[in-house]
Length: 272
Picture 1 (cartoon, helix red, strand yellow):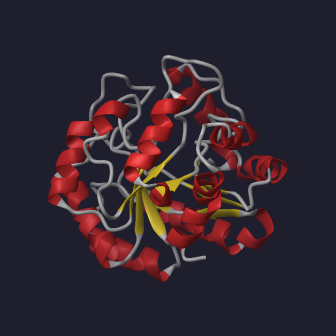
Picture 2 (cartoon, rainbow, N blue to C red):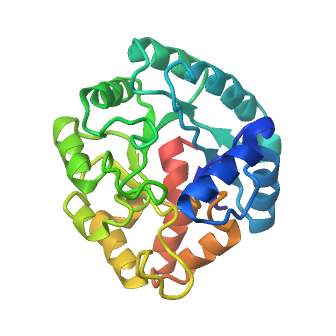
């Protein structure tokens, strides 16, 4: 069993436009068209049993439509292998009430992306959401580090992440991209923090690429943080699903560590 803890889909009506815009801003060619049906088919072909969709609310109030579509995805997870977290924006009013609704709807977690939401990760608005989510025992996944589409934006830089962790000790917090994309050495400052998970999305690449995490450093970070709190993620549509799993298998980790990362840790965190 493999669980992908980090993927993205878009409604069919806007998927082509959304993926094209992100591809243009990042300079990265997508591996998929961003539709849920395409992701489900690719996941089956790659041997991935369950995929977690992470929607990003780019404006206040968007959580409602995302909750509706996410609930539909969760209701058909047995057929598609896709489940969804919920989206929430830092400037949504009364986040406590919103999280009450999302919890009642059955969502196990929420996604935040401070760059796309124009809010530093240690801003009081995000800290408030983190406290609310902890009270609801909900998982929070946050983009960590720099964003390839916006190389000058620092809302999730390692300094802001360290400040966030000091102000709100994590409970079920997942930092994407091994803690801080492109700032992996600096991320070691907060590795090992209790209640903190990392995902592997968009970190490893075939061959030696200066823009990605070297395998030796990846293995070092996994063991420094603890292999029992690292989650496999692909960042689909920006990485190959099958290729991402093979990169974990060939990284130099031992079999027990690989099994934990590919499925065991996610099963425990999701309560499966």
